[in-house]
Every structure is written in C-alpha cells, then in structure tokens.
Length: 280
Image 1 (cartoon, rainbow, N blue to C red):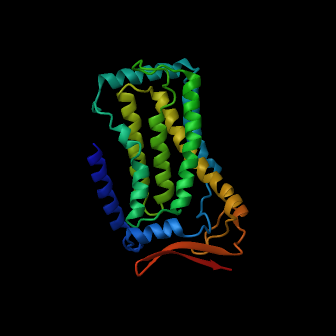
Image 2 (tube, rainbow, N blue to C red):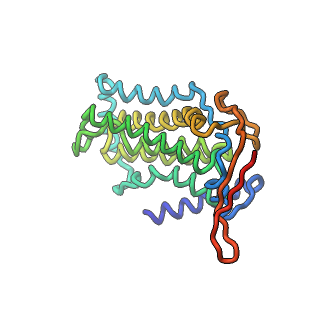
Image 3 (cartoon, one colour):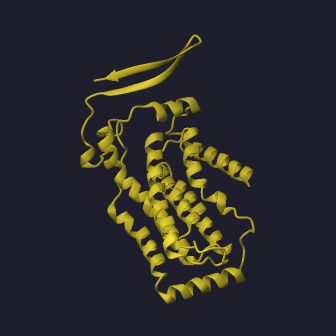
C-alpha cells in the first residue's frame, strides 16, 4: 500500500507540474528549498479568510454534537450502519490510515517539483501545525468527554472521528495552498478526505455523525488557522504588504519593514561557510 501511495503521489505531482508549466518556472529541489526555507520572512501572502467561510464546517460540527442528545439523529446513525453492512463495498484493508495523510503529502511533494503554494515552507508549516493543535485539542478532548461506544464495540472513543478530522484538515490545507494553481487540487484533496470518512463507517469504526463532526472539526481548524495566523505572525515578525504580488493583507499587517536580512549557506572551492546580507 505504501508503494501505491508513493506511485500515486509521483503521478499526481508530474501531472500538476505539466498543468502549470506555462506560469511556473522549473526549479530544481535545491533552488526550491533555498527559496522556501532561507528567504527572510517578508509578508504573509493573502491569508485572510472570511468569517462566513467558518459557517459550513460549524454546521457539520453542530450536527455531530446534536447527535449526542437527539434520538432521531442516533436512529439515522443506526440506519446508515445497517445499510453499510448490507451493501458493503469497502476493502477489508484500512487504506484510510494512509489516505488521511495524502493531501498534505501532495502539497509538500508538489512544492518539491516547482509547484508553489501561496505561502512559503515556513508559513504553511506553521499554519498546518496550528490547525493540528486546535483540531487535536477539540477532537481528543471530546473523545474523552463523550465516551461514545464505537459501532464495533472496541472502545468508547468513537466521537468524533480522528481519521476524518485529520483528512479534512489536510484537504482544506491543500485547497488553501494550491487552489489558485488549479481547482482540481482541492477536488483531489477532498476526494481523499471523503473516502477516508466513508471507509471509517464501512469498517465499523465510527457512526455517521462521528464522521460528519470529524469533517467539520478538520475544516474548521484549518480555516481558523488561516484566519488567525497573520495576526500572530505580525506580532512576531512585523509583517507588511507583499511587494511582489502587491496583494492585500489585514490592516494590522501593513507596517513595512525598516530592514530585512538573509542568511544563506555557501560553498566555495571545498570550503563551507555562511553568507549574510542586510537591506535597509
């Protein structure tokens, strides 16, 4: 299965590179890493998320939470469970254990072949870590509070679905970073996430409402991270307006740098060193 995921990733990245060949300069891995890892922070590229975008995932979370107290929703859970057993089509192997990570792997894999997202390696990684922190706090906190029994009876940590939360977090992360290159990136990411959720139901690890809530928590965490990160970063780096793209960022981020600096490794005639420059 690991080989299959690796092959799928390679094929997808090759296809993605071809789609943006007319607008993306081909860079080798070293140049890409230098650009993303060693460029001094300047601005956060158009990270503003509208508050209205938080409503759909919040509705999904609300549905899941309502199933804890509303019997009609629990009846629907049992109905989906019976239908899944009667019309079983998923494989016995738990491929969702791998699918949940596919969107994030594709984002970083695409970056290595020259398909850049809207944020640098450092920014996007910090956003992803922030989203994971919020998601895990909510998901595992609720698992220990609700004590819902799984459909297969293995334990009482059914609500909400952690696999589904993680997969939809990655799908939204992929959409945020790469949708400006092509909308198909988001479609592929959400296809992996949806498959993960469906497989969790068919393998009797979760109820339908567990999966719905998990999807909501995953999407909500990512959107919240993209909404909050510019303000946190502003406190740390005094970010300003993006000079290359001239894109707007939140008002709090429009302070210009008085100076910027960059530190790069160097290699000259067999000697390793560091190269430092500062612009005022």
